[in-house]
Length: 79
Image (cartoon, rainbow, N blue to C red; front, top):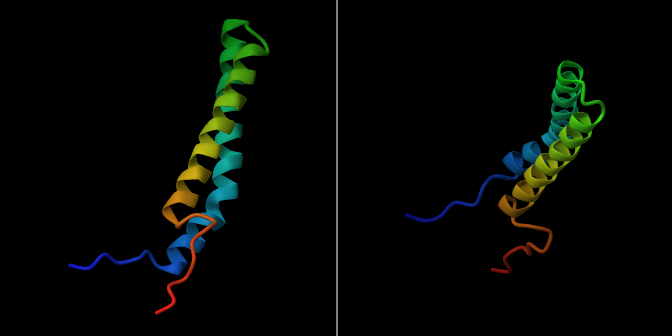
């Protein structure tokens, strides 16, 4: 069996949704932290931790998409 390279459309779809995923991860984690701050009376620490964790999750997803798509140094075959 030959190894098939992922299609260009899949790569474009992954990159196209990347911005939405990054923003949602920050807002979701920050929102959970904000909610927990209200319940536990720890304002603003859990929200700050949530935003940081959301940023890490978004950047991790971006790194994963870049690696799976071949990275920025992917050169076309000259065959």
